[in-house]
Length: 111
Length: 356
Image 1 (spheres, rainbow over the protein chains, first blue to last red):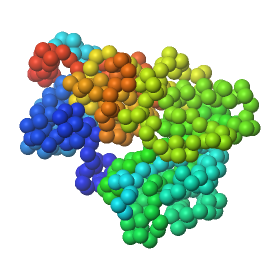
Image 2 (spheres, helix red, strand yellow):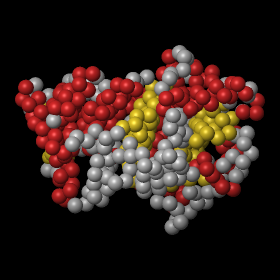
Image 3 (cartoon, rainbow over the protein chains, first blue to last red):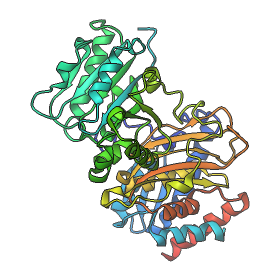
Image 4 (cartoon, rainbow over the protein chains, first blue to last red):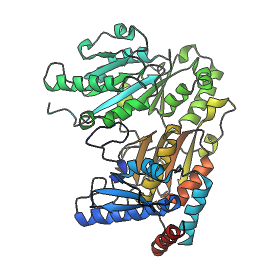
């Protein structure tokens, strides 16, 4: 369901158009799809760690976002990730705040 | 209708009050290049006068009367488009291959585009075409200084059409052109005074960055970022600026997706436009992205790099966001890390999780 308008059926989120074989459609091969989902979870968690929230794959169909205390929410795609992350963490997830940028720079450079 | 495109493009004709939208539309409709066009008109006011000025194809003309497109009419717009689609499929109206929506001078054009994407029926039959914005050569400058809507309309345009250039003075026109280039550096600029105005070109999407032909010879419309960064000395609303980010390293698509969705979630209203060609890690061909506020079009693979320049270029047209901060944020989030460091990066995250 689209979180903004409540329309059932949902969107193909643009970020689901993955730059891999079968590019820019949903990946057909199961293994590619799973690999990409795992990759997405890993990349998102790199950012979400700063907000005390973690993302995990749920049955290869959705994602579960949860806090350390167990509050959790199921989301469909990246379009729903950030509003949900803000709800759960109670914080504004703004990529332009200097703390977040510095944290991401440390992750990037420290690797 | 077998000869119809799978997705009918919906073009949006916008422009500030009195900037000549209807005049342009009338001219377009008499042009043979625009046969098979359905027109939707949105009128601000009790009686839609514009409706009476346009007489052709009246049975395909639907008047949206409940006010400004950007707030109230989304549902009505969807209904009108569905109705057109339904009548076309049943053969009740002549076939049409494109739709033009004339919006009110006050509308923020974005909701029209999002209506197309969000509606469960429409998104299977229609797709956003070009945004064409008329700019009044006489009053345009003052409108840019005074009304934020005017800036936004210019910022998201694919085609900017100057009107009333015949009664504008030379110096003012030059200043206006400079202003337009700062607000929206990569839209094609046309003038209604030009007898040979390329009508078909207004709706032709082959020149948009989305497609493979989408580029200037060197690969991008925005080639002089230096002059784009200076905001004009105008007041508050002149905060609409554009700039180009050119990035050396390859971009991690997934990380880029996380970053852009995060940015748009917080600042979508202020990112009037994002458009670019990306050098993605693991991809030989460039990928074009194109977004308007919260809406990002599906990315497309371009056929080849237009030149030897393999850097990614992303144009942002923003309303009051700090360009250097945006670039720094992008580089922190979205650049592909060298392979060995990925494992380390994950580890760092795990540590953070444990300590936070």
